[in-house]
Length: 274
Ligand SMILES: [Zn+2]
Image 1 (cartoon, protein in one colour):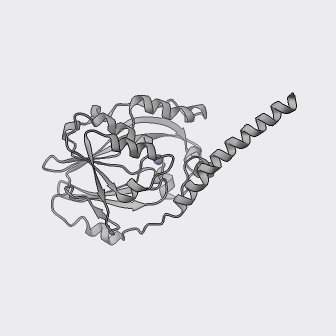
Image 2: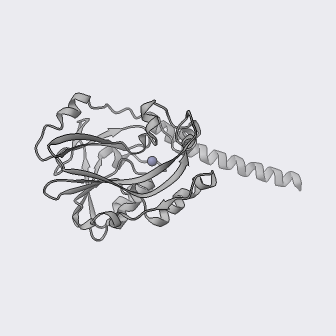
C-alpha cells in the first residue's frame, strides 16, 4: 500500500516536472532566438529635431510593494528592501493630445499579483488607484505597452467605456509573438471595446508613431517576446529632455548602472529571458 502511494506520488511529481519543462523549453528557445537591431545613439538624438514635441511626461503608480533587492538582482552589495512600482506614464502635447505607456493594475489583480512575493517575505502590495483615478480617460488618444505582462496591461480595462477612439499602438512583433505570460493580455487588447489596434510594421529600428510626434517605439528582446522600448523627447520651458521607457528590462537602477542581471532562478523558471 505504502509502495503504491509512493509510486503515485512520484508519478505526479514527474508529470508536473514534465509539464513545466514542456512549457519552459519552447519559451526559452523563442526568447533566445530574438536579437533585433538597436537604433544608434545618433539616430535617437536626431529624432528630437522635429516640431511639436510633447510638453510634459508624468508618472503615476497604480500599486507598490516593498521587496528584497535579491529578488530582482543576481548579485547585490547589500540586500536592502526597495519599493517595486507598477506605474503608468502620461505624455501630453501642447494641443491636449495624450498618450499612455503601460497601464498598471486594477485592485483585485494587484493584490493577487503581490501574494507570491508576500509569502517569500515581501511587504504587502499597496494599491494606489486605477488609471481613471489619475487621469481623465476621455482625454486619452493612444496607449502602448512596454510588454504584455499582466502588471503592465490589466489597468487598461478601466479606460473603457470613457475613452473614445483610443488607439492601441503595437509593433507587429508584440502582436504576433506571445508566450504563456503574455497571450492573455494580447487577448484582452482584442476584446477592448473602447480601443482599436494600430500595428506598426516597418523596417526602422526607431519607429515613429503616426499622430504622436517625438514618440518612438523600438522592438527589443529580453523580458518577453514582443517587448518594446519607448523613446520620447519632451520640451519644457525651451529645454529638451529624452526619456527612455524600458518596462521590466531592468527592475532596479543598480541593474542598469552595474549591468547586473536578474536572478538565475527567475530567468530560468519564472520569466524566460535572455
Ligand atoms: Zn514583466
